[in-house]
Length: 305
Image 1 (tube, rainbow, N blue to C red):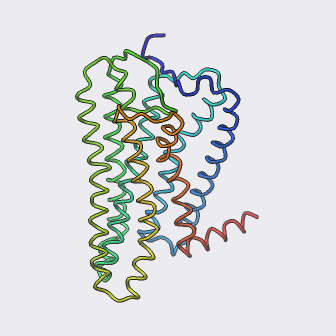
Image 2 (tube, one colour; image 1 turned 30 degrees about the vertical axis):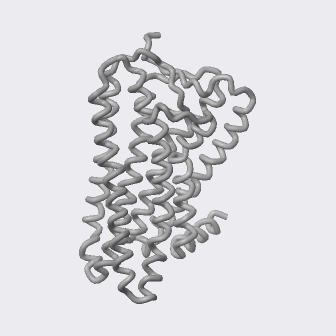
Image 3 (tube, rainbow, N blue to C red; image 1 turned 90 degrees about the vertical axis):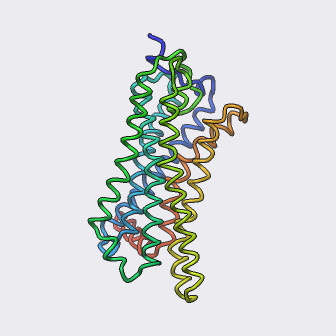
């Protein structure tokens, strides 16, 4: 095999019988993610009163979670039960594309949710004229297509590199780890990677922070009842946002700071947080905190029985 045609996933080597425990845990987690997010999507799709921007964006989060985890968990479970841990270069780049498209989409959907809450709280009388179904569809389309195009360009840039190594010390394909294995000039890859990180993660999170500062200022000047209703709809989003921000910070720090030395187990856990915790936490937070969604989910479960 030509060097660079296949990658060896080194972290799956010599894990012994503990692989069965990891397989069971991974299988349960993936089933939970699929079930929880499918329930959210079904509840919002079936209930006409939930066909509003805020709930549609919540369903977009669930669709994105299913999209991202579909590229990670099946391959993880296969590797855990396999004796060979080879992955073709094309398949590796495809997995990296899907996983990092998911991460970029997540931050931009959260930005749209913050914008939706800002408009609803700051301009309640104009909300229906601003957040029309057409405008929402355009915003979702642009905000999901843009990061996928950017990550696609990253994949093309990585595919053109000449590899001088083929050992990946990750449990999933990571574009920056692929770039580090190259013996070609990677300046373009690194510069474009920083550009994507800025436009799909840092800028959306900065806009979200700005939106919530404005919301807090508005709420301080409003009545107690207005503040209560505003915080009731914003707090779940803030919880999701904080969790995602911490997860992305851990992933970026671990991949970009070469001098950071952590135990291998802790490093793996921190690097996987953005792929495991948000897809489970998002549907639980929104399912429990929004009565309309919770009521429809209970109805679906009873109907299935």
